[in-house]
Image (tube, rainbow, N blue to C red; front, side, top):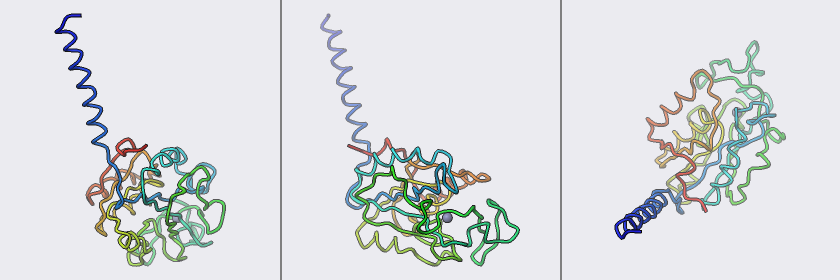
Length: 237
Ligand SMILES: [Zn+2]
């Protein structure tokens, strides 16, 4: 091998090593002031559940891989009373996925789902987040829905999550879960409203996409300053 060729090879391999190091350095390493918010990874929202989100169960291994990279993990559960106002069955003449007007505005009506204490409302058994420190249950007021983990749909009643995170010195949240265009999006936008830096890890979410709701949700999130990333952007072990 000529000296010139071997030098070229040396430079090329050095460049490759530097590029690998740069890629690792570009990854986000969640610190003590960050929390992973695992939104509604419940039986109701996957195949076999009452309100399945297409591909919902596929996010579980992604979340299981991400969770150990976070010192702080919070899990949420949609947790409705029987006969909840968000259920079409509670409104005479209405079918699931139609809308109605409630005191706080337009409400999408859903099949009965995530009823308190039911197997349907349980977390997916394959979800492995043993380090989760808080489980927030939402949507438990019979007359008010709550897509957001932070604030109920009347836009007045807090779940307490914002105060909890602030009390623990957490300023940044990373959102994963179901569904991208409803509970994840509302939670992410509310996180921004409360002053948190917010990332949605897109490949760790799945959407319902009802009448263009996914595109609308991404626009709202982007306008609110929510950052859209992929699980590969996070430094995991
Ligand atoms: Zn619900």
